[in-house]
Length: 266
Image 1 (cartoon, rainbow, N blue to C red):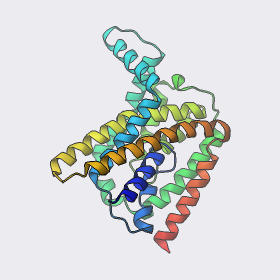
Image 2: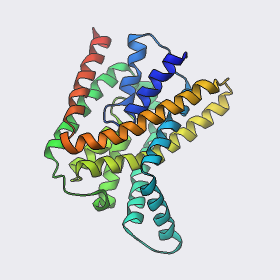
Image 3: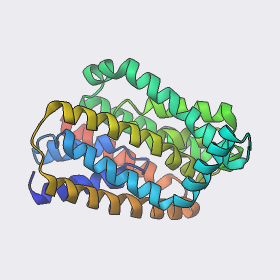
Image 4: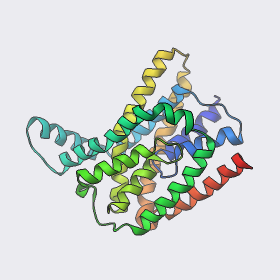
């Protein structure tokens, strides 16, 4: 890839990783419109590292509190709100891990087509709209509980289907279960840390095994751009939903789904 492609794709990944608008839907647009080839495994690892660094830095206080409280709950038997939240996040991660391994081949074979992405972009956009309108918006992330956490985890597993959006599916489920908008977003962002870390490790392992040549300059640029984009995205998203809710993202998803359908089916 040339520098322009690196910047554009890293921006797309960084911005769409945490917004409920589907990164996979956006990443097929350059290939559909501009004829760009797939960016490759090494670049995927790089932009995921950038996104991971952004969410960990933004929530650094929460991450430290969750980690230290979780360790204390194991070795000292001390339980707190933070330790419970940490356990719920771990529990919510498990469905995606198990279903990801079990269904990986089927998803890659049958569900990665652009038509599937276009349809799921629209369907899960409408579900997000419905959840935002019907939610009681009462609970904080510290009131989630293990049952709700597990249900949100299964929603995250649905995001294995391209076009669904990991953040979109988890925020939709959290809203349906009564979390307020900011709490739903924060729980989704914190859930993303183990998921992105695991994905980066697995992709890194595959990359080492392939033994391909690596353009470290392009990768460093990809890490930097995706980090800045993801950090700004998290900050602005939390500001927007407190004032406007999910409606702007629902409208965007419907427009994006229509655009994808136009390129694919017409």
